[in-house]
Image (spheres, rainbow, N blue to C red):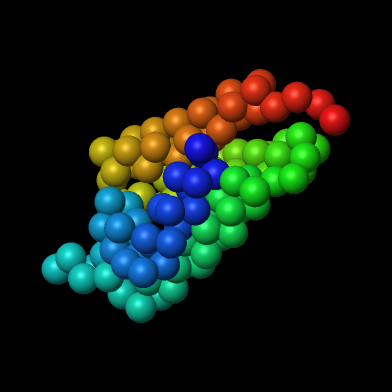
Length: 116
């Protein structure tokens, strides 16, 4: 389920990058999203789509474990990088909270994966 949710979100961000850029306040002074921020968001969307699909269709417990690790590290990276560049404390708390929450949820889901 985490893989499917991640893939859906990634696809949505690819189609509409403002789903990521606006909550992270990667916008200019009047609220428009610069092309560079849209490119960053689409890159994250593509990563999430690919890693979510890999997790959703992993053929073995080992492949699932690897896909889960990629997801956790991606979310931790988002918390550090996007959170570290947030324009204000409230946005930083939101970005870090959401990304770290997904990392924790994904890490906990690893407990359900049986070893090969």
